[in-house]
Image (tube, rainbow, N blue to C red; front, side, top):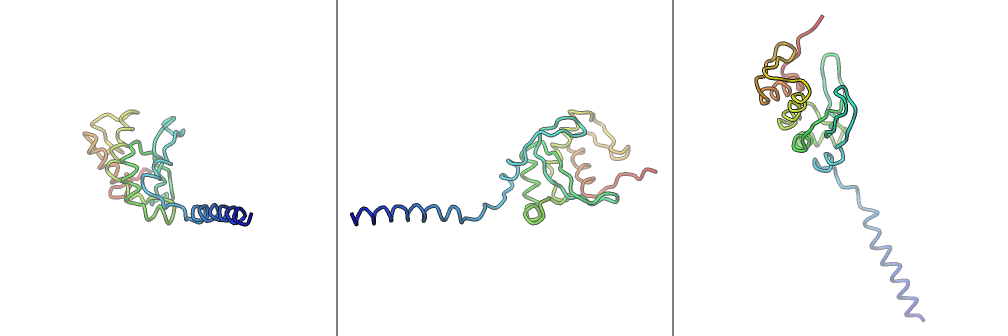
Length: 153
C-alpha cells in the first residue's frame, strides 16, 4: 500500500514538474517570420479590400508624425522590413519608415500597378518612374523623406 501511495505521489509530482517549465517559460521573442505570419490579413482601405502583411510603420513628415499600418503584399517584403526594424518593433511596437526594404517597395509598386499605375508615371507630377524598380526607389525615398512631395498651397 505504501508503495502505491508513494508511486501515486511521485506520478503527481512528475506531472507538476513537467508542466512547470512550460507554464514558467517566457513568451518566445518576436521574429520577422512570426510577426509577418500573424500580420497577414484582409482589410478595407482606400483601395477597397486588400489582403497583405500589415506592418505598423512609424513616419515623421511635416504634417504627420505617427504610426500607420502599411500593406505589404509580399512575405519577403514583410520579413525583410521587419528584420531591419526588429529592435524597434520589439521595444515600441512599430518599424521605423527608414527600415522599409526594397522587396516591400517593389510589392507596393506591384499593388499600385494593379490599381492604376502605368509607366511612365510621375509621382506628384515630379518624380518619374519608367519601371517597377524606379517606382520602388521613389517610394523608398518618399517613405523615408529622402525626397519630399511638392508643397501645395
